[in-house]
Image (cartoon, rainbow, N blue to C red; front, top):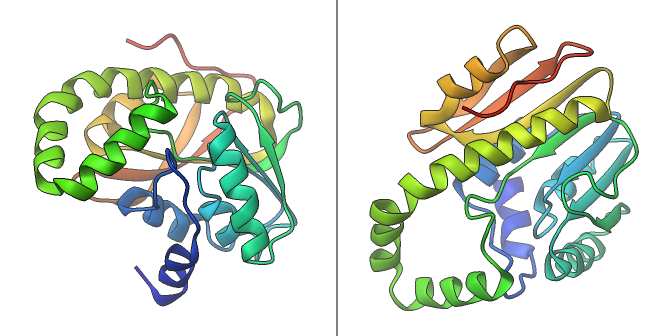
Amino acid sequence: MDDDLLRIVDGLELADGVFAPRGGSVALAACVRGVSGSVLDLGTGSGFLSIVMSSSADAVLATDCSPAAVQCARRNLERFGVRAEVRLSDMFAHVPETFDHIVFNPPVHHRETERDRRVKNRLKRMFPMTVKTLASVVGKPIFKYSMRSIVTAFYREASGHLNPEGTLYVNTLSPDLGWLSDVIAGRARVTECRRSREYCIVKIAPIAGEAPPAPR
C-alpha cells in the first residue's frame, strides 16, 4: 500500500457494519486512481474509493444499499473535503444515469445484515485468527456461488449504464477469473489489472448491446 492510499485508509471514520478497506479494496483503489470523466462507485461502503477517484474524476456518484454505509461515506467525503453525491440504492435501483466508469467492490458476504457485520467485526477484534480460519473453511464454498451470482447480475445491469467506450472495474475472486471470462466471452474485453491468491482486479470493456447469459 503506498503512502497516499495508507493516509486515506488511516483517516477514514468507520461505523458498525461498515468494513475498513483491505487487500482487494486497496488494490482496486490503486487501479482506478487517476480515472477521468464521470464515475459510479457502486457499493461504496466507507467511501474510500470515491475519495481516491475524486482527485481526477469530473464527477463521482457513490451508492450503497446500507443506510449506515451511506451515512458513513458522507461523513468521510466531508472529512476529506470531497464533493460527491452519496445515494442510497440497491445496485442500480435508484441509478438512472450513465457513466464513463463504474467501479464495483462487491461485498463477499452480501447476504449479511448490518447486525451480522457488527457482530463479525467484534469477533474479529476478539479472535482474529479463529474467525479468519473458520471463514476460510466454512464460508468460501458457500460465498463462492453467491459472489458469482452478484457479479453476473452486476454486469448484466452495468452494461446499460455505461457511456460509449465506458469501462467497468471489478474486484472479484482470483479462482473465479476463468469463470468470469467464460461468462462474458465475446461480449467484452477483460484486462487483468492486479492479482493475488485471493482477489483479482479486472477492467471490463463491454461490447455495446450485449449482456451475459444467466450464471452457471
